[in-house]
Length: 258
Image 1 (tube, rainbow, N blue to C red):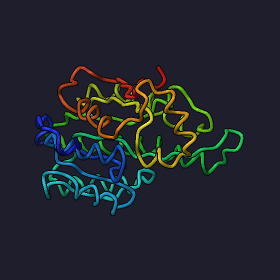
Image 2: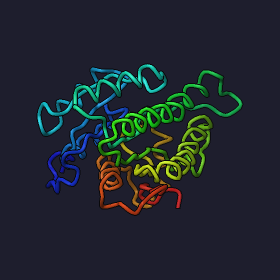
Image 3: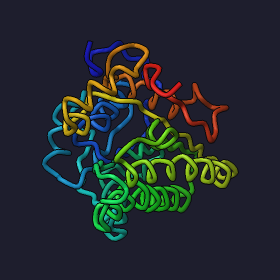
Image 4: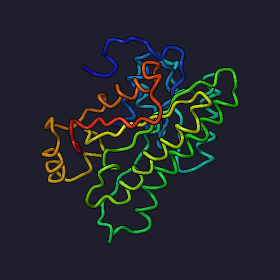
């Protein structure tokens, strides 16, 4: 059953949720599940057309919005946050930091551009969006209560051959999550993260068949994850059902890396 077709419990009704990298994969699934749960979704992506494609898939019609955002660029991030607030009448109170890239190369062959792109998108971008989100929510003042879920990776914990820049960036996401959780909890903003395993997304599809099969043999359930399976955990962490979870890093891996 698709994310949008699942019976809704509407746990996020009235909330505004911003998702980065919402144009495909886990980000798109998060948008679908959050809309199903009653949230008004701000779909952001570096490509506006991809964000609009996701927008067309969401239940709830025209209450949702699509905004272009390059997470690497502070001006783009701040402009997108302002656009979201202007269109929705209030700043988002829920954030999914999902935008990410993946590049392969042995550490001795990784060039500066490959390293920097992974760090810029996966880690610096997450910092810029988190900062802009928290500032806009706290400045609004009427109800600063919020929640953030960062999408890390189990590979940020285990490491992996030929992925030094990616795994370093995702390891940074894990520790950044814990630091933000400690700092923002007193401001009524909970921060947690999800560590996906190998998930059936365009990013995974960019790898070789041999690499995918090698990974699959290490997954206890014997299959890749589905984006909606990750999205359900994200929705839980954003909701009051997880109200006592702060700084948690939840592994959703099918048993990979145990």
